[in-house]
Length: 161
Image (cartoon, rainbow, N blue to C red; front, side, top):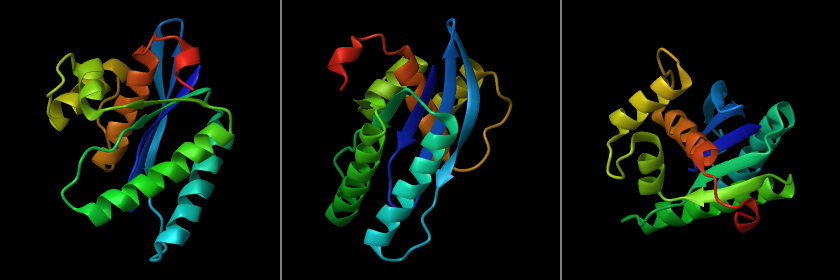
């Protein structure tokens, strides 16, 4: 089972792709989608096209995406919500069983503590996936934590659509 985790944003979207097989988790890919367009509507097209390419390459069956949390900057919050809509549409259009997770749920699933800091989450991601160093931006590490959360989620699949 291939699982993709997405940490939504507008300038940088983290993704993490893992394989879950016989209770063994392994890293396949992780990184960031970084749209180059200045205009937000064209950024959305780039996000969609980049995510479509990842889906075509890895063919994930499940996805996890972080819910946005309250933000003080309304303009940023709205842009991230719009990008998240593009991402959700792309995942669902491709028939990927998608679930949303609050930041504290992701921290709880990965570290056992819902108020864990980013460093603790990154350490557990490295430990669980047996990888030395995490490279790149923390958006991609967060996305790996989201993919792990999705792997650990044993709720009825029919409720997650």
